[in-house]
Length: 562
Image 1 (cartoon, rainbow, N blue to C red):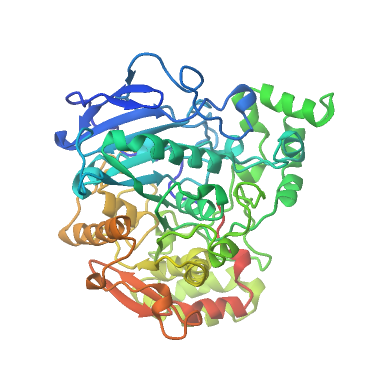
Image 2 (tube, helix red, strand yellow):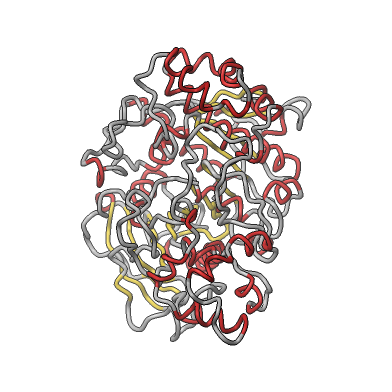
């Protein structure tokens, strides 16, 4: 699912400051620098696995070997950002792909790499997985130095293989893999990065027994995938999914059939030697050829931030699949069975699409918006749009854009995340919470210069506020956002909730949080936290609206994936 698209990075990482202490790792010593005004030690571009190149392309992640692949000699100068994983620019499909296949690196930010906290156990650890449709993104876009300093935690930002390099599944790749499956390599990368954290984070002042994995957008989807993977046991102690896609359902064989064109596009379908010859051919291609061969929908997604117009559902290619080895079951089933049972927050935004709305209707009158919506949704019935708007009278009274955004958000994320939160509340013994952020920025945010600036509770606004990423869009807009007191208060509330989950595995009643299962009549009723500068617990948020959509044919087929 689109979090932020390729190339949307924050301003360049802060210039190197004083030298940070040299830290030992399983591969050798690393030297860092200071950040956040000197209050944080930053170690950027640390390898955590062998390069996924050559025979390691389209294969499970290969661990580092001391003195061998993925390691280094001497002291690693970890003061510059690593190359991003090879990717296209989703904002400019005509641009050449950029990055490197050798991209399995991570960044570490720590308040003090030589000290410990929490009674000698070390700082709490937050391991972040970036978003970008599973096709784009980088560690450099998410400088968590300020988050580390403000919260007194160790923050790790990891990179993972993207697009075809990270998620391609074909019959030939499955046949040649000892596991008899393929795809989801990016999730295997994430698990290997989390193993690196377990082995090394104590040397950076962190507590390996107190690791929260959190991700936003397709990073949130990744969190759902990790919770659907038995191999995740012991890699983290709590999890937070921010605007994750609830739709991880496609099976391996369906993915293999859908991706058969990749092999033929690459010119490898006629390679001699059967499946082994095809795989050899695919691994011998240059990176540009791999990108050129991927199915068209992998590079030109239908705009998921739109309004449903086809009863057949959202035509999106699932990169994240149920491969049977890494992700062993659909996410809802994994949660309801308690497969990886850890304290969990499932959070989404009221107006997710406001970041990049497929249709800008902000300047329309209500009647103009109705006139536009009626034919757009006509395939569902002549009065379908009018009936749908009954569920959105309040946002419509504010502005048609707010109603548009909520319609798309409810169909793609909110309703599905309600289902997943209830599933986890049923299957987990650990505490499960659901957050729904309704407070947008205090003024429109200069994002990309396309004539519209997001102004409601948009996709990734919670991450920006909680992590202090106020300059996230500066590279494109030329302007860093200046937060108001209300913006900062929202960020503080969200960050405090995350830190409480990390430290205690539960959210304090003093903040008005309640577990989803605490509602009378659960699972038919569930509790959620409406998040602004404070938290208000409600019961069955959006339940009536989601039920209406579902009974009118707009259900799981329209949940976002990836």
